[in-house]
Image (cartoon, rainbow, N blue to C red; front, side, top):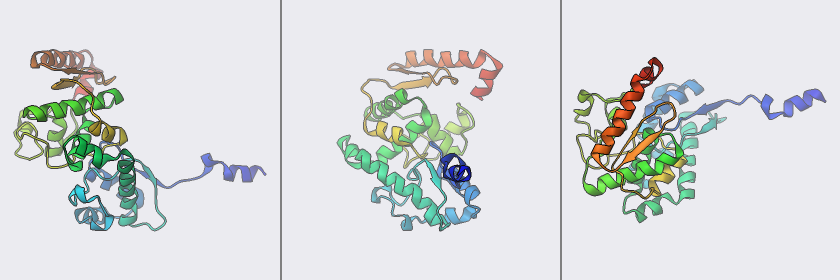
Length: 254
């Protein structure tokens, strides 16, 4: 009887799973799936370079970046690249259908791909739930005013580096269309896989006139949103002071 109870206890069931993280880019997902399955990374790379078998939303433009929904999945019995990736793309379709994502994007006079791109930036820029709709509003406010977005997350994507909260002058000089310091408007596509909260924020932004934001405490994620450049500079000074406050803080600042 005790043995049967142990076998039926979910805590004792060994599950073979793989995890796709929120805010990760497609190349990160490839590494995660290859490591969990033992399949070569090239099998996933070839599929994602020509993803027609996956049945992506037509509006995704045959680009898999951003449409592998971040979650924990059980390895399928039929272990191949298609069956693994389909778990994540099917989940993405289910979540965006539940959010009525395409119609809500249309209500904002943007395409679903543009809304997904906004969500992917939101996911990379902040971690606190209350900040996500505000970041989305900053993006839309800047677009409306014709201001460059100047999002460091897009520069990190452009240069293939996300190891620091800062970007260098050299990074910001990149000619990549994903460099939103150099190019106005949204980048050409998503820069990460957004979770449900970030997707919801992109189609339901907060109300506000903010044009700037910066995290002033990298431990708590406290972020200040401002409407003028002068106030933004004060917030940046707060972050710099926080970074100088201790060795541990300096390490987090990179």
